[in-house]
Image (cartoon, rainbow, N blue to C red; front, side, top):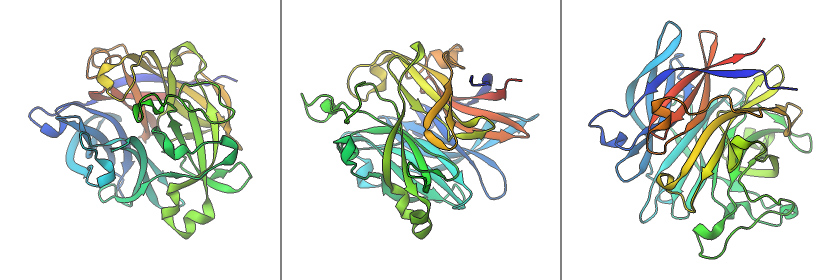
Length: 352
């Protein structure tokens, strides 16, 4: 099976506002969602001087059915919690928002850049404006992995929009994520610690689950993830360094469509993106709707690569980083970060 989906650029949606210190180092990697009145909103990562990130809110302006710009409405999440700040760093970064109809809730997964580096966290909202932190994610100990997933930095977290069968068949909410196994960032000389059964050091896409009944009982149980499984590793040349999930998975006739990023180039140790000499491109894979740990098809070539000036030149050059999908007047659009500095939009089409 092939993945019959393509991306076609539709334009630049948002660039840093001149004179706005909250955006001095870029606007990028947005989440999206609709307010109760049906208005489409962007929730961009806003990077202020000193590399401090916040999550903003901006109404998407549409012309002739195409998103063309935004109207800013302020900041909805800032690194105000102690665990979102270190002595020399702070940030709430790279939000992904999934509207989960069965919970009637927007679920934001984001990266808290705190004392121990990037750790994943969850916040929830009914209207996109007021967000309640559920706190850092907790990955339940799993003896067969012979490790504690909570030890590791983790990024690219995003929930499926509806329950799926868990590994034991139990209806569950599922979340994709990307652990990083090198602990040398935290303790010099500690190096890479791989889970049992994993032989490739490169970061790949994992999935973890929460039973529906636990979340129905108490929404705070969304942070208590279990039954961790590896979904996909780098396989093709455009994914040589690593892969990571992008927007919330989209249910399509073939299964669950996951738009992901693949990275090539040179990536020094640490989390400073400006030291990287890399290329981020977008690919796609299809997951089995009866078993989301199983990839049934993926693109051997990227479906979007950095080509325009905004994608090639920025805080980190040569980056397209898809993070959200929305339908506008019957057409699906993917919103993506451009060179860690601006936000673009591309049309998502299904091949005949």
